[in-house]
Length: 259
Image (tube, rainbow, N blue to C red):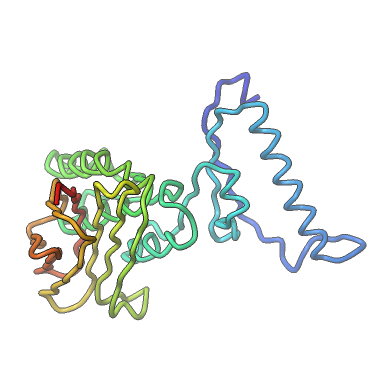
């Protein structure tokens, strides 16, 4: 049916639990193993019949964000925490588990979002694959311009998101439901020519200042996405980042020139 109807994208969700296991004469664990193997065989048949099919592996709560399944799928929905303020934290920490190019980060936008909140949500998508949802068609012209700027910035950073190495730093976050402190991910492209800095601060007294040592070389800020609450410049091999208001996000695209 998928082949005949011309489908190119398939999302497979998983909204139930196996409980303590699956009935099998040997053991509940063997039943689970055979269940998982059957699932892998099914994905293999899909790919053999429709090699170009893009499969979204959904349900992080179903323990599907693990290497053997992610090797069989192109991408995954990273979390159901789409509306909460801890999305950037989950998205950044998930880079330890799956590749950013496979991690769908949802920015759920609302017409009553402030500029700070809009940028906070959109900047979180720079930790993986940008996905936009919510009241998109109710946004004002100014808000839509912010969305377009985020998309333009993201497209310039895709090569680094796809092929790079990340360094995650955070401090003072503590309770992830009532976040404080700040975090950043510096992702350097494999060829060393570009780096993506994605940073967020949370509910803590402003200003907050970050001193981020960059890899050796002459770096410059090639593009940026943030509000006027964020100031950034490079000084003596380090990126100086300042948040003058709490709960803000920022993306900075860095390029390395000749030494």
